[in-house]
Amino acid sequence: MTIIRVGLDTSKHVFQIHGVDENEKPVLRRQLRRSEVEKFFAKLPPTRIGIEACGASHHWARLLRGLGHEVLLIPPQYIKAYVKRGKNDAIDAEAICEAMSRPTMRFVPVKTVEQQAALTMLGVRDLLVKQRTMLINAVRGHAAEFGVTAAKGPKQVAELLERLASDEGVPALAREMIGVLASQLNGLDIKLKAIETRLMAWHRQDQTSQCLATIPGIGPIGGVSFALKVPDPRVFRSSRHFAAWIGITPRDNSTAGRPRLGKISREGDEDLRRLLVLGATAVIQQAKPGRASPWLLGLLAKKSKKIAAVALANKMARIVWAMMVSGETYRRPAQA
Image (cartoon, rainbow, N blue to C red):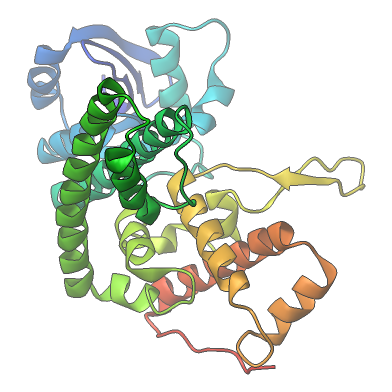
């Protein structure tokens, strides 16, 4: 018996295995505890192992590769089509094993430990930014209950807190409670500055990130994000496929020769898509004759700013892919 392919369904504690031989017949069905996985695959002859690209999948891919196996990570949405009926671990493992056998299947590159460590900086920064926004909204909401308001923007919060402290019409208990929120806000600002300092240091030593940051609307954070989350851009056949993966292309519902395009698909990486749209919005705010490309000015003359922002984000994604593949620097288009 020669096992040519194994589908591995992972979880926190229980792992399901489904293996087939050279005749595509199931010869291995087994459930393992987490502590047994490494020991089992250490005894198994080197083979191809498929894992759903989910939490901790990169860790298991690196571990199994270290044992001599060929490991492939498959996007979850590509596995769903091979689930026959029902939903349990054994069925999922069988679907993974079947999906990885398809010649046109797409796989996720396995990230290194260093890449994942750098990605934690982006994840922690995003979480702290969300927490800061929640605190700012809470401070504004409580202050408004006593008639104290300020202009929009995080920079106006300091002025709002000063007015609260000096306003005798605000009860002392309210000022004390809002002060608790303000102390947490100050702590978040210190942590965010420390993380952003480390991100900038990583950006300065990474050539790809520096190159991408020259694109209008990308910047250092966008450059670092693309460099870490897209370690191998050549897995995409073209810039068009790359933009579709990010989810800023229309959803295709065509049939019977009739093209029917809907809203943007919003598939792929949500953070990359958000960075592109926000960057495109910033570029549009500064778009003026003599400073912006003729293409963008023509688009703004016909479409709304929101539609133009998505279209520009799509174009930026294609530029990012082209620069990552070719290694060339950004060249600004001719000015209008």
